[in-house]
Amino acid sequence: MAQQYSVLELNCAVKVLAGQHFLQEAHLDHLFYLDSDIYVWHDLIDVVSFLQTNDWVMTPHFTHPYPADDCLPNERVTLRSGLYNAGFFATKPGENARAIFNWWAGHMRNECYYDFAEGMGVDQNWLNLLPILFSGVKVWEDPGANLAYWNLHERNLSFVHKSYWVNETFRLRFAHISGYSFDQAQSISRHQNRYQWQDQP
Image (cartoon, rainbow, N blue to C red; front, side, top):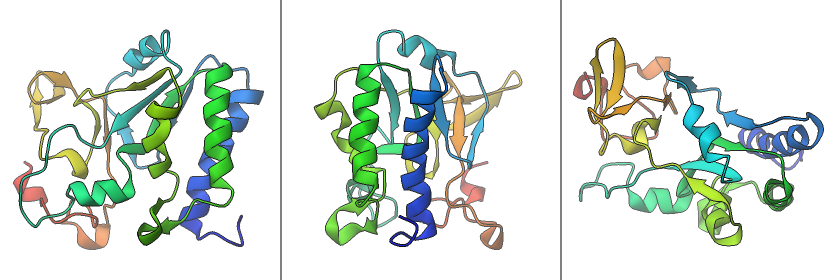
C-alpha cells in the first residue's frame, strides 16, 4: 500500500484499517475518530446516546443548497469528494460495525485514490453508500457538529455567555480546520474561495 499510494492516500487508507483493528482488539465500548485538524469545543455525549440505538454516526458536509454562484466549494465539488465527511465518525463493537469496517477496509487496500475523473475521493466518497448498504447508520445533522469551510454558507458562529453557538441555537460541538495554511493566513482554507476571515468575524 505504501508503494502504490501517496502520503495523503495512505493516511486515509490506514485510518480505516486502524479503526478496524482497534474495534476488534481493544475491547472498547465506543470508538471515535477525529481528524488531527479538528478542535472539540463541547462534549460529544449526544454521540454516545445515538450509539445506543445505532451502530455508526457520521456527519454530512452540508444540509442546505449553496448559493447559485461561481464560488467554491459547491455541490458539484461535494458530489466528487463525498456527501459525508470522513474526518469524524463514531461506532461501537458489534456485527454491523464489523461488517462496515470489513467492507470499507476492503476498498482501502486498492481503491483509496484521489482521482475525481474515476470517481475516487480516497476513503471519503465510499461513505456515500453507507446508509444504503447498512442499517444502523445515523447521519448527525446538528449544525454545531463539524463546522467547516464547506458549510459556512448555512452556519453562523457567535459567542454568547462564554460559549460558541451555531445559528444562535446549537452549541458548537467541533470545528474542522481543513486546508488552513499559515502561508496564506487570510484564507480560511486553500480548498475554497467563498470566504475570508474578515467575512467571518
